[in-house]
Length: 356
Image (cartoon, rainbow, N blue to C red; front, side, top):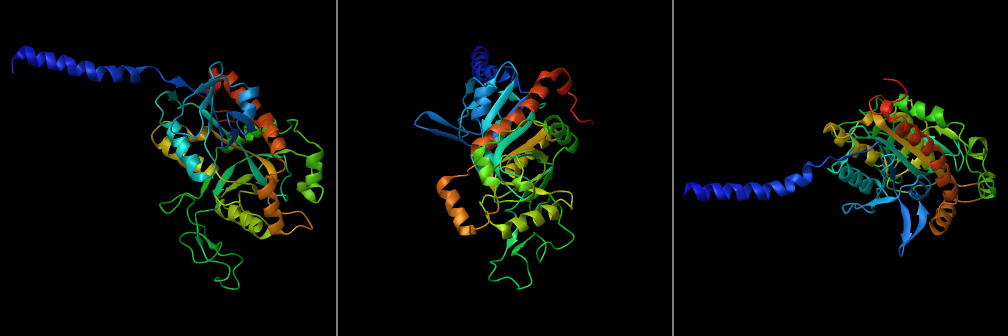
């Protein structure tokens, strides 16, 4: 082969390699805040509302960006650099969607704050329907060993046993994160406290439906909606009733070393945290910039005079009754935090609110 031919082939090869390389070299969009939502009710091209709806309409997020590896297009506001994603429901979809977003070369997420704003079941011992909780810890309720109650020893309170242990709640608790399972994630407490302090007096929606829902309850479950700090227990199974609620309370207490108080029951948060943890290993995100916000769309315990089976059947057929109020309150609490983070970007880009 002559030198001239060899040179020509090299030039052609470099040109072929160079074209896609040029497309990848363009500067990614620096995102300031990612709003994480888990579901949106869209049928026949019409948006019937969901966790994304208020953010899209009220913020607003007017730019739709393709997200073919996810369940919904991304929504974006170029003025404030706020990006919203719908993950899809349950742990697996949430983890897959966040991992896909985190690896997308079109976005620089290295300084982004993450605010998950989703609906949940609320423990009436801690808060009421429509209340909104900033999570300090999030605990997985699926990762465990289990015996059917009919097969467990008669002195066991429940058949759910931690990995590496031989009976429920056996002390000491295993490591919250290990090769066996990442069961509990602690969030940046200073950032959580900052967000709570900024929003604890936020006006929340309360209406006749909510008053009717909380009438059969007592204590915190009977109060008008309020903002609190409390933990989330995540499970891909929707569960109901006082026995499993007691398990949730003890499970959160066990895995947080007595530091956490179960408040909200949902599905996705541990999947989100698992994906973000892996992305943090690669330097793509900062785990200290994560906030998880849950709003009570129903109670985890049935009201007096209703059996657990009746409660499950009613919610299966009719849905979670306080969902509209929870969605409005999630935005009323989450938006001021997102606005504070984006408006003061000259400071918050490099300095996390709440202290070092």
